[in-house]
Amino acid sequence: MPLVEQDVVIDAPIERVFDVITDYESYPEFLPEMRHVQLVSRNEEIAIVSFELEIIMRVGYTVRIIEDRPGSVTWTLQDAKMMSVNNGGWKLQARGNQTHVTYGLEIRLRGLIPKSVSTRLMGTTLPNTLACFKARAEEISADGSHR
Image (cartoon, rainbow, N blue to C red; front, side):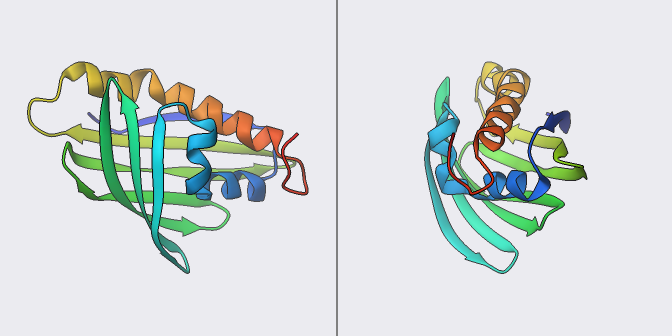
């Protein structure tokens, strides 16, 4: 599927939004489809992370993530059985105490994966994912604790 982008304004400062996005191992706490996350490695601005999610069927993949604090987080696919492409990213722009976020995602599935899986990945899951990240960033107080 081609690159799909969506925007949202989050009522939280850019640093907090960046921290929520890059706290990969906490994703299962607030993303209902996310079953497991493993931070394989992280050094300076690069993280290798394995994800397992369930949307109609279980899908596992590993991505290489470039973290450019505080303005962007981008990734490219490293390894997956069911995907040939999984590229995307977050662009963050500070607007006072708010953050304008653009989330982009391009996914291509391999072989005979039902079209319903890719359609759901892009069509329904994308807006829900953004809503979950927005809620997570907005619920964390300035000291990092949850409200």
